[in-house]
Every structure is written in structure tokens, then in C-alpha cells.
Length: 291
Ligand code: GLY
Image (cartoon, rainbow, N blue to C red):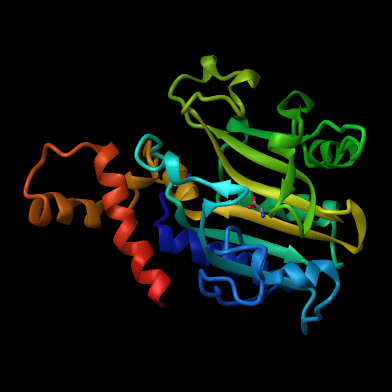
């Protein structure tokens, strides 16, 4: 696996999907315009919400973005995680490729596998996939499971989970659908890798990417006018995996900021990671909210 910088990962992702006909769309502001259901952009799909719902048309049916996101309220709130968790930031960048009634599960999974294993060269033997197990409202996503297996994934590596992990919703309303997540085992000892680690608290398992198959409107659970794809890869988490470090805050995106806080502002080396993480994030987020 190549040791790519955060900027290189972002550019490789955007360029990869551009080669597959996606329009590169700039990130919007963190503050959501014209949507009373949401205060901040909490994922890459938010600027495209009305396109998924079929009430807005864009001059493209495929898009790729590196979207600024903030998870501090509503369905996606990571506020209490910052500090204790080495992998939650509240403010982060989400890489995403989107299809608006264009390709669906087969196209998304084929491109996802190629990006992970050929472009980023992640070790196949460390990858785990999850799909929705189904319930009385939304059927099991056997199709996604079979599509991963058709890419050459060992069926034992395709796991099934319920709504909490594998049915993605933006909020109480808006587009939603079953999703398929990719987790990387980052432990040193391969003999300890096991299915039970996926979606557990074990820090050796890092969920890096979510592929959502948009099919329903959340409030009504009515079928959307078109089947679409929304994906979200945490840029800083991907950098953590590719740079072989154990925390998002140990990646090149943060180390110089942290070193400067330690040396110049806090004038101490005793401050713990737990206390530093909110200090690091607060000014970045505040500056972005003003922009
Ligand atoms: N919209 C996909 C995600 O946030 O995981």
C-alpha cells in the first residue's frame, strides 16, 4: 500500500471518478441553504438532496465531491465522540461519488472495488463488506452481497447487519436506502482478524467507506422516482489507514497543527490527545463556518 498524503488521496479519488464520467463539483458551505430540516451539511449527499428526490435536475447524472461536513446535531452527531475517540472529528471531509438515476448497485460496487484494490491498492485480505440484513419494511440486500462476491470477495467476508449500520438516513426525512460499508482490519496480527470485530468497539477495525443505494423517501418510505447511489468515504480515516497510523489526528492533515499547539500555544508537552482533539478542531470549524 502506497503512503499517500491526505491531499493525494483526495485528488486520486476525484480523478478516478472523473475518468468514469463523473462531474467534479466543488464542496458547498457547511451551512445548509434552503433546508429547514438540517442545520449543517452532515454528509456528501446533502447538496444533492433534491436531485435524489427528483425535484431538482442538474446538467449531469454522475458527480464526485470532497464535501466539508459537520456532525454536531440531529441524526449524525459526533460531538461527544471528539476527545475520547481517535477517529471522530465532527468537522471532516467526505469523499463521495454519486449517481442520479444513472448506475446503481452493480456500477457502484464494481467501481468501489477497483478504487480500493487497484487505485489505492488496499490489501484484499484485510477488507470486510457489510450489507443490509432486511426487515419487515426493507428487504435484505442479497443483490449487493452477490455483487461483492462477483468481484472475487470471499463470501465469508460479506456480513449482514440491521438498520443501525446498514440503512442510511440523512435525517427524519429525505432520501434513504440500504447501504454497504467497507471496513479495513488494521491490526498487526492477521491471525487475530475475525468477523466479530467488524462494527465492534475494537479499534483495529476501521470503517472507511459507505455505499448507499438510495431507494426511498425516509418520512413516507415511498420509492424514489429513480434509484441512485450516494457514497461517503471519510478522507481523514482513509489517510489514517494509508499512512499506517492509529488516529486521524496522527495523519499529515493534523500533525503540524498539533505540534504548533503543543510548542507555541499550550507551551507544554503534557497535554493529552483527549484534550488536544477538541482544541485542534474548534478553530478549524469556526473558520469554516465563517467562510
Ligand atoms: N451518505 C453516506 C454516508 O454519510 O455514509
